[in-house]
Image (tube, rainbow, N blue to C red; front, side):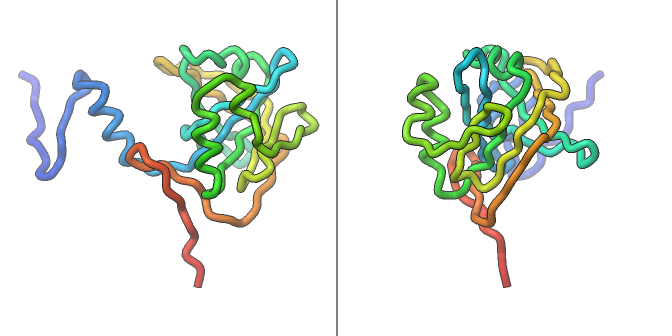
Length: 176
């Protein structure tokens, strides 16, 4: 007989077989930063909003993010040889929304960028950026995890754009 845990007071409890919307609601309780990941493939620029970015290793310098296998830009990111992660500042909520939908021309329209030595674009108003070569591609369910080896990076001091419970906000450091 399988043991079913007692429901914790104040929680909505679900199982792995529950409605996927319930799983997404639980995941949305984890506040994240917001990034735009860019790439250059077949002489075109590609970009998308992403909040699955994380650090992996300091030595070597590795970062990761994930992309849905069904994404229209999957080939551009997995076959291009590299990507640039742009960590968005609190002023860039419109940029995050712009890179979440539409064709690539409309995503980049009016966004200040600088082409790196890798040929990938860096969003010049981002608070940090990491230009990476693909180190490893990991098959993970309905996503691929792209692990990148950081080749170049930069940052500036400002507040970060955040995402929590499917809403944008910002993170600001407490300074004395």
